[in-house]
Length: 203
Image (tube, rainbow, N blue to C red; front, side, top):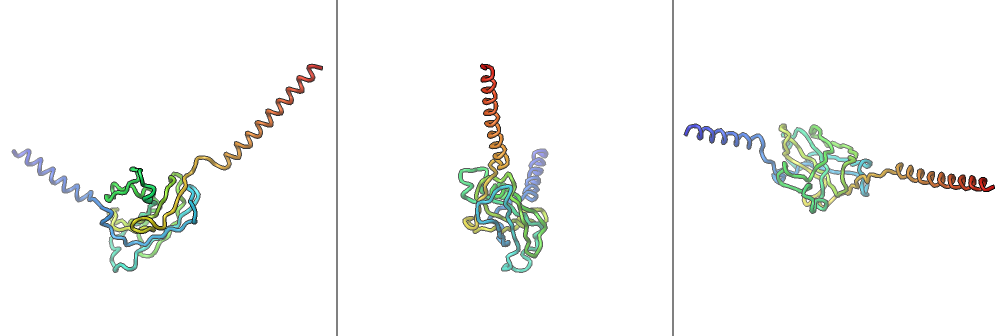
């Protein structure tokens, strides 16, 4: 009887330890204490070329000490709802460990009490979609404790579109055209040379 009781006690202790070390953090539990803006050209942006300037800081309407636990800011590029439809790999989940809304890191930097700005060149592997920007405040354990984003709660305002790299390059297209033109000229030259040789042979 002692062995099963000991085993049960060990399992309970382990479960408690797991809950402490791997606490579930839900997005709905976070306060929106950060003000985030994203500046960019007012047109569809191109992956690998265009830049986004992100600015964030503490919303000054909150009382002093609100940011006492903030140690790091992580800014991410996130899918807007319109680009999540029928795409389970982009699904929003309240449990942040399972959430797939924000998959692209823009910057991670120590938290400061003053507003901070960072310019980010859109990475080449970002797919075509509609996006927004979100910033998380992390504590000393690197866990999310607050957030801010450049859109409203329903994620319908200040959205922007990014177009993925198509795989074709202008220089390659130009080279292809030049090669095709050269091939045609060479073929015509060969044809006329052979025709001339045939005429001389008949003489």
